[in-house]
Length: 444
Image (cartoon, rainbow, N blue to C red; front, side, top):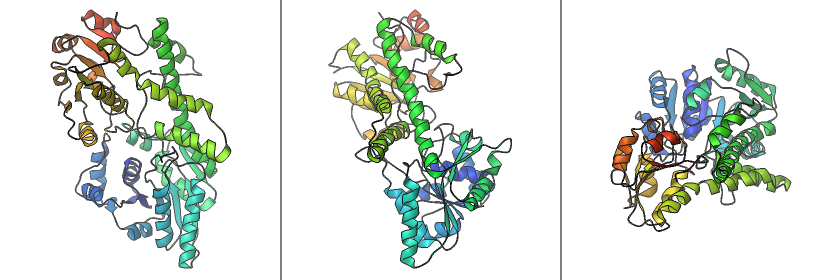
């Protein structure tokens, strides 16, 4: 099939590349000429394991191409994926200007039947706005062309996006006409050879499904973080509690790991957008989700509070080693990352920071520029030299089995603040290091 993907951000680039991988002819459009040049020259503007190799393979095979030519892209694909950004607006709602602009471009240039697919995470009712924008542009041209409207939300985890797309647990299709549904079945047939993973529903239900999924996962995280804070006060061990409740098959173990807060491009934005949609569209306050968001913002301040409780509010002259900048492993994404809250708090208190991350250092340099009290190292251990303490923010695999004796000898004071509960408290303390995890017995 001929497929156009509008937007070469995270969702668009992964989706387009995976669709090319199974034999489709894919043209990816972006108005950012610099990004398209990077892709045409073999570069990849985002970090995602396995993506660069897959892009190069499909470009070489002629199945994947990139362009800034809007008219060419619209006329190319029968299937038109809208995978543009929907950043949070000032009031927390999703900003749909890029989605609507892409829809208008389709209406201005389409010359035959198209299936227009919302792949971006968009509020309920967005498909109606997309449809209206296309119809307005067609009317302005004085023509009447048929097109299908589909909501096909993505469920891609950063760091595992290719596997999620190639081996999906479900494919949600919101559609209201048989012709569009038939094309979607054909498009996704290679991804569900073992059994039918398509979940066909009305468009508004599909739009809400994406928000509901992320809101539920965010709720589980905030729930566990609040229990972790309680466990510390009560002298309980949240890791034992996690195992105890996770053994119940009605609860399960996924997304029950306490930590220093969630971040990224999805959970914070989607929770805010769902709260705003409920308030504006129905006059409803989603009190559980409001608490989820509040709890998460509070959790991002847990590490700074622990550090100040140990070293005092004035951190002038102190240096802290920071392991992890990305909001989660296997990505360079620092949007809403807990590390940013920590860095701001430490700098405001007068501290210096030496940070390591396997892939997010370039993104951190872009965000913080030439901040003189923040520098970066190529290895985790190099960050520890002459630091007063180690703070762990991202659970990269490279951090899971360190040499505790070397850590103790490198630090001025042997202290670890662990925002991801990577280690056994007993093992760390036996090595002569004071250990401050989340929701577990603390250093004396």
